[in-house]
Image 1 (cartoon, rainbow, N blue to C red):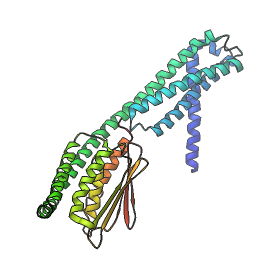
Image 2 (cartoon, rainbow, N blue to C red; image 1 turned 180 degrees about the vertical axis):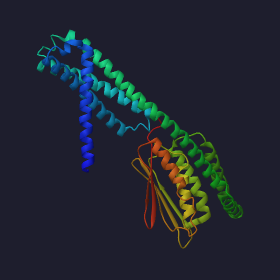
Image 3 (cartoon, rainbow, N blue to C red; image 1 turned 90 degrees about the vertical axis):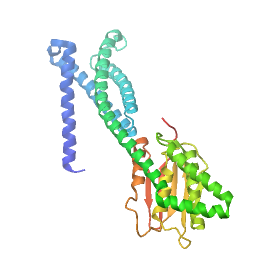
Image 4 (cartoon, rainbow, N blue to C red; image 1 turned 45 degrees about the vertical axis):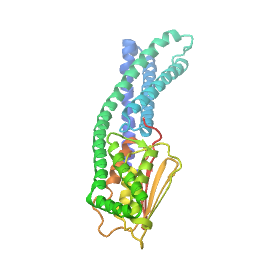
Length: 346
């Protein structure tokens, strides 16, 4: 940390102390009136009491707010952050007011706190009301600001989700996919009627699933894995032994973003060479609360310029839904994407 930053922090703390002391004089005067200036001792005792109360409430509330906001950012769930900040700050305020009054009664004002409790309680209640009003006004301003940001982000993410679904659907109905699928189906009809029937069933399942996800933010992991199996089946029929896919996901609990596995699988097929000489291997597995999609890489010479757009959209949606980020690990010979599994739908 450079000297300018250290100096800035020191000056900031000094300014905060001055503001807290001036505020304490104002509040103390509102309680005691001209009696505050009747003697130096009375002025010092009362303003010191007001200052300690002001500075502890201010800095304590700031620390609580900072800690909770890091754990539960305003930009993600402003309603939850408001509730947690308000409840913890009010609880801290009650304890702080009680302790400050107890300590000053015994050490500065030289009175028995518990014997004089009936006369102290009204003052403590007024202090509590003032503190709670200031706290709520502060947090409500913050909430309104981030609620607007969250709403705009939600609208943006909904548009991106629609775009993602459109891109997925478009990839399924593009001429190359349809031509290849129909060519495979045509060959199966003559050679293996049972497999052709299975191919048609899986083909229809893909379209039905894509169309069913129009208004869903999250889907059960089990449904997404079943869809991925149907999608993989079509490609395995086409590529035969050139495509090797293994799915080792025993725990199917939780939820993920719809069409995310399909999008990541599509990236594997679209951006890598798949041939008998260079087979493509894809592995999907679960480790705790993450699904891993791994593949060996042999990128096509004519790489699609849209590479990575689907991953970016999925990543942005996860940033909004959870603090667990999507992670991409790219090495010379392999490519891995790690996507979070969300335990429950809130």
